[in-house]
Each structure stands twice: as structure tokens, then as C-alpha cells.
Length: 180
Image (tube, rainbow, N blue to C red; front, side, top):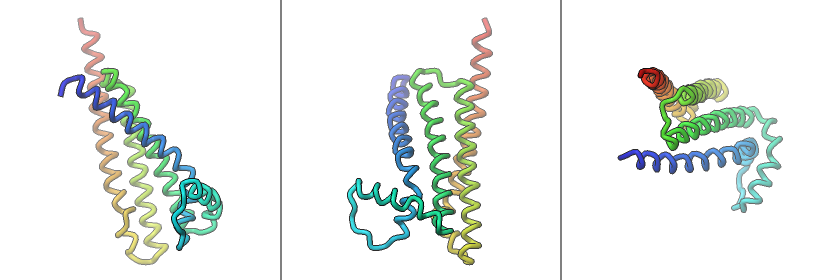
């Protein structure tokens, strides 16, 4: 793939990342309400407007239940970390579109994304341990939450390595630019 192919791919990915970022920001404030709705049973199909209205109705009720509150805090924290990671990815893709990829700001962006991934991994671990004590069984080990731990951890390590590579490439590029 030539330069133009990479740029076109980066432009397409930037649109997807931007759309995902906006969807994340739209849904993030509704997380406690969605968790509250999840506690209900027998809800019939709702239109989008009814769904948002019901989410706002259950927004404050969720904090009364211990499990729902922990789940809400976990999802809000992970959603915020995801938004930060998406914003950093958008910045990296923006420099690829401009064909100025190996820069120190990109190294810092990837490091921020790595920190967010590692925080998600640590938070998932804390939530799993909390679930073990809350339920007094091994059931929380067999949930989607446990999958977040190694996946987010590996994502964090990958972003750390990429950050170091981008930093080295930026230093080499700067040194090369200064050489006459």
C-alpha cells in the first residue's frame, strides 16, 4: 500500500473513531440509568425517546443499590477511559493524514492511551475481586469483566511499546533533520 493508501485508510479510521467517540460521549451520561433499567424485568420494546426518558428516570435510583452503584461506577470509569483513548487515537490518525507521524506528541498520546488501558485493566481486576467477596462464590471469574483484565492489560502494554517506538523515531527524525 502506498502513501495515499495509508492516508485514505487513516482518514476512514479517523471518521470511525470520531463517530465512536461521539457515541461514547452520548451514552456515557446514561450509564447509571441503563444499569437501573437492567434491574427491571418485563419491559416491553421502547422507542428511542422512551428509552432515554426511562434512563433519566432511573439515573438517581441506581445509587441506592450496592451492586448497581458499583457497576455504574465501573462502567462510567471505563467509558471515560475509552473516550480518552479514542481521542488520543484520533490525534494519532490526524498526524498520519498530515503525513507527519513520528512526533513527540504522538508518543505522548500513545502513552496516555496506555495509561487508560492499564487503568481499565486494574479497575476490572478490582471489580472482579469485589464480586468474589460480594457473591461469596467463583461466579465473577466467569464473566465478561474478567476478559477485560488481560485484554486491556495487553492493549496497555502494546500502547506503551508503540509510545516508546514513536518517541525513538521522533528523536531519530529530529536528529536527522538537524544533520546537514
